[in-house]
Image (tube, rainbow, N blue to C red; front, side, top):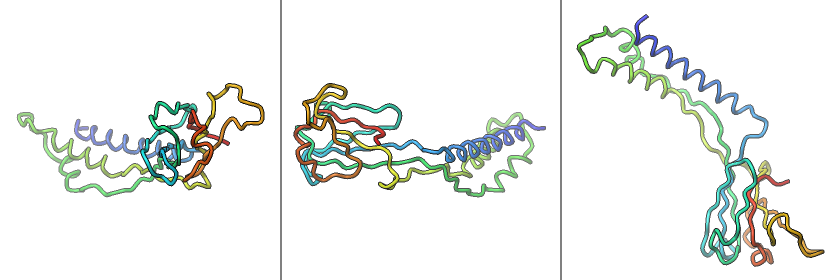
Length: 187
């Protein structure tokens, strides 16, 4: 078997392995949400803004002074999930045929170029996937606003936190009492 043929077969096998791994990736029961939170200093999504991101894993606590806004007037949430959806594009058969049948010339410095182009054609057969937005009804992530540092004791009768699980144009009294934002999965 020619070295070029082994290279092409290895390329085809690697493309198949990537496709199989991607299909298994989609079958996970709860895909990881990536959460993008845009915090506005004024109600109605006005004023200065800062965008925070959370890519899954442990909850992330962000102090208000880190985002350098005087207060939080409104919050806009965007959640995304990566979906593996292969889009098959047939390769250029002429290039593949040329790479398989071409005679090797040891004096030609560009001898491996056709094999490289053929590998690129095989790899380009698949568009691996895309990011898609998560509907609010299916979303599991959000922002928890804390008046005190998370875990510290609060005044009796006062609510220690407020969950924001949807776009909120006006946070009301929480716009001035918030000191910490906690990004993550909330029930």
